[in-house]
Structure formats: C-alpha cells, structure tokens
Image 1 (cartoon, rainbow, N blue to C red):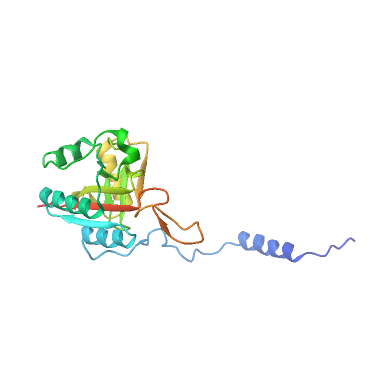
Image 2 (image 1 turned 90 degrees about the horizontal axis):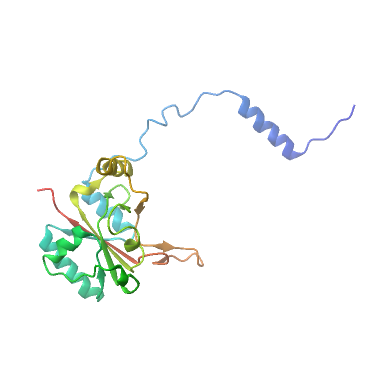
Amino acid sequence: MNIRNTTAKERMLKKIRQALLQKRENPHIDFEDSPLYKDEEESLDVTFAREFTQVAGNFVYCDGEISLIENLILLAEKLQIKKILAWELEIQELLGQYGFPIYTSDQQLDVADAGITTCEALIARNGSIMVSNGNEAGRRLSIYPPIHIVIAKTSQLVMDIKHGLRRMSEKYGDKLPSMISTITGPSRTADIEKMLVLGAHGPKELYVFLIEDRF
C-alpha cells in the first residue's frame, strides 16, 4: 500500500472542505433586516453640512436668491475668480437677472476658473452630491475647472442614495441618464508617497450653495 504524507496545505484545505460541508445555523439571521446606519437625529440640511465639510467641502447656506448672489460675489472676490462657466439655462437665467457675470460657451472650458452646475440631489448621509449627464452641463463642467460650485435647493436634500435614485426615477421615468454618479468632496489622491493631494484628478475646491425653498 502506497502511503503519501500530506502537506500542511493539503490538511488545511481538507479542513476547509469539511467545514463547508457542515450545515450550521446562521449566527446572523436578522442581518438583512438590520439597519446599516443609525437613525439621524438632526435635520437633513444640518446632517449634509456636517458630512460635506468633513470631506473638505465648502458649504454656504443662502436664505434666498439675493443671498446667493451676495455670497457668489464674495467668493469671486476672495478667490479672485474671473471666468465662471455656466451652461445650464436654469442657472444662466437665475444669475443673469441679477447681472452676475458668467460665460456660457464651452470654448472657455480650458481657461475657466470655476464652473457652476446644478445637481440631481444632495445625499445627507455621507455629504455627497448626486449628478448626472441629464442636463446641459453634462459631466465636463464638474470635472475640468479647478473650482466646482453647485447650486442646490433644500427640496433636493435626501437621506440616502436610494432616495436620490428614487427622485431621479420620478424625474426621468424610463429615460434615465446614461451617467449617474456621486461627488464626495473635491478630487483627491494619496497615491504619491501616501500624502493626500487635493485636485489631482478634478476640482481642487468644491462649494455647495444651498438655497432655502421650503417656506
């Protein structure tokens, strides 16, 4: 009879196979029904502002359109922003009625200091911005300029991503945009010597101007 000595690896694999064949009770029978997150005690706007600023976002609350314009002017002066792009008709009309200077041509993209866009929703749970290519701004305006400014309304605040997707489903029906993503803070990377660098693959600064529209 030929007896072959088993290696440590073979013995380990044998134990694994035996363990897989044994039927055991699920120690976490209610895992799928258990909540992934704890319930938030704060309002959606406070939760979003807290989480958004924790990922290096800049949050600006505006109680109306006048406040929005005033804060945009202050930001432009502070950062010496000269060329701001806005491709969405909604933003062009909003800023245009107050005489706020913007560029509307995509030919200015390579020299733009900042880009202003809307969004699909604000995800309060993790301070993220849900965007898509379903509007005139597409995807480029949120990526190329070094400063990305998002104008959003309090009615766009939702708790989780699933709620944001539900809003989009209600808005677009069966014609959902081909690109849906979330932005969580400015672009960043730690690939080089494990040092965090902002703006490596996109905007270095991200602002959300939140307009109150729930009166």
